[in-house]
Length: 171
Picture 1 (spheres, helix red, strand yellow):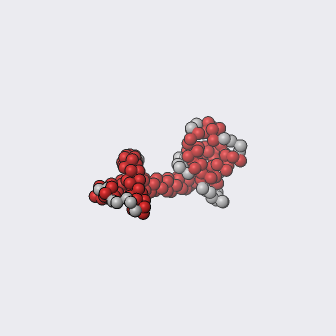
Picture 2 (cartoon, one colour):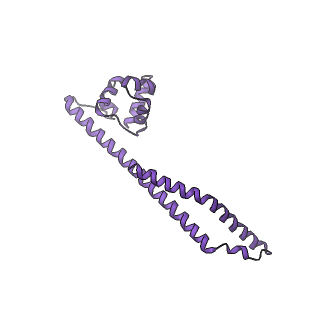
Picture 3 (cartoon, helix red, strand yellow):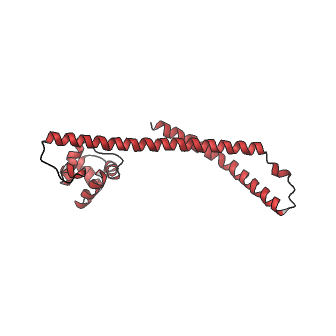
């Protein structure tokens, strides 16, 4: 909600992300992250942002009406809302990291199990009598699968281990 409000007010003022970033002394990517909901501005930046966009902080945060309260209470409320938004972003990032870890481990385990199955089967189809067309097709399909799997396996293993390491380091 905060990101959508920042984007809508920036566009209504006719400002680009770059222009708003210069006014706030941040980089353009920071404004982009705010608008996409990847991060939130701290309390001081939020106040400066509201001044640049000409809207109260409460409007940026999505409140429809604001009672006249002392500035301290407003900042406290803002800080609490920012804390909630930051917590939600942290939970989302943690879920993504866990999903990546589980996916990488699953790909690795499935690849190793498939390799083990192929090793146990031992290419027995090579000794089949291929004079029957149906058996010849089955042998060709098995051979094609084995050939493709052996060539893709190193990529799968390296990608899953690399993905696991990257996801683990993001903790």
